[in-house]
Image (cartoon, rainbow, N blue to C red):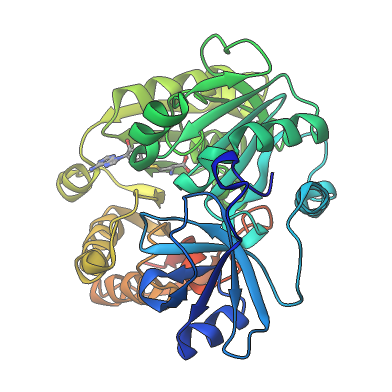
Length: 408
Ligand code: SAH
């Protein structure tokens, strides 16, 4: 799978870079930007391999070329010269699978097998939901290679089906040139509705065909488990609840009540079904589950009810770098509203998934909100990436959660 058919006869695509970019690539960064390319032996096609040489003509790296994107090459391998052939891809996949082999026991059947750049598969994600696998592609570089990639996954992974998900920006090209659609199913029948998987013995549904990301927020597993430990006897508010992931854990942990707050009726219906799926746990059966469909910023600001534990895990508030400062202010505001709704001894669990807001910037914004509240508080802990979502470079660090407890 090293060459798309159209380039079989052309000379290998070779690039040379600016000095700064050489250093960056040598340091293992997975993105090479278009303005760092100093020399190119011919026009390249999206998806073909590009070999990068340094100024002394020594091999630096090899990656997938993108003719259209500002990220011109997505690096697959840097360091010693390496041929990217079928055997390499196979070994590459085996390495990702091995990294997950010992992470989970049989009570967890949903997790990430391939996490993009940080696993050596730039802009590609593979999630497992029990026997259904979801392959999500975020860049056109994979489109000409999909058949080979799918065949390789099929060979190495026993599955009922693989669902293809495509980020919105590549959907038109995928449809027009490759006849690939978001939600297309390979090797098995299309699931009827959501698929069910388990996480620490809690059963959840995932809408793998249409849901956000690949159908569930697998990256919050560790935080959900933490919330379960903190929830006993508490009235919990889960804002931006999506399908109630945090809520079912809180209920199993003995929460008295859990309120799911989300703007999407669809998400709240899913949260209800997730509660129904776990009635076998006496604590879940005993917990009062409420749903509120509203804008969380407005609702929390105006609500009068108090809660003993509040989870605030909004969608990314900075989709691009220019939105960074506004996002930091929005986090501070949202968390001030949340703190005002916390009862005595209340716990705030504040999350951010904005890659453009750094770990320090986010934690500081929440601490600022806490200090401005005038209440005494202690910091319980912070949690970042779980082991099946490794962050191998700075831009990949998107997930951060901070836990604060307010005394009075
Ligand atoms: N905490 C969730 C993931 C959150 S995803 C989990 O762990 O599974 C973000 C959620 O926020 C989505 O369900 C989306 O519908 C919701 N959302 C987006 N904007 C919102 C708003 N202004 N008010 C309330 N919910 C919102």
